[in-house]
Image 1 (cartoon, rainbow, N blue to C red):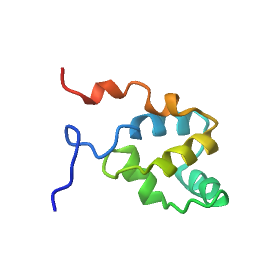
Image 2: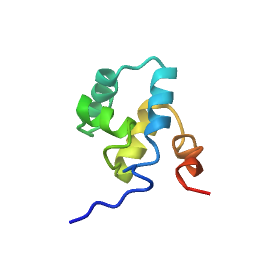
Image 3: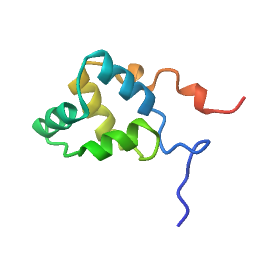
Length: 86
């Protein structure tokens, strides 16, 4: 089965996830721990792959990222138009 991508990316939130995580000085390990506390199990390799567009993001994961980072979905998805060719 062929995996669908958008210009080679499996998600459009990875850059913003990395940006907000670093802005708040939260390591990949720490975000995994915070996610686990709200019932979302992710590993450091999952965070890395999401941040670099190599892993898809489920809606519940996007919501969990927003909750633990204190951001909105609009924040997480901001500037996503850069993934589309003009």
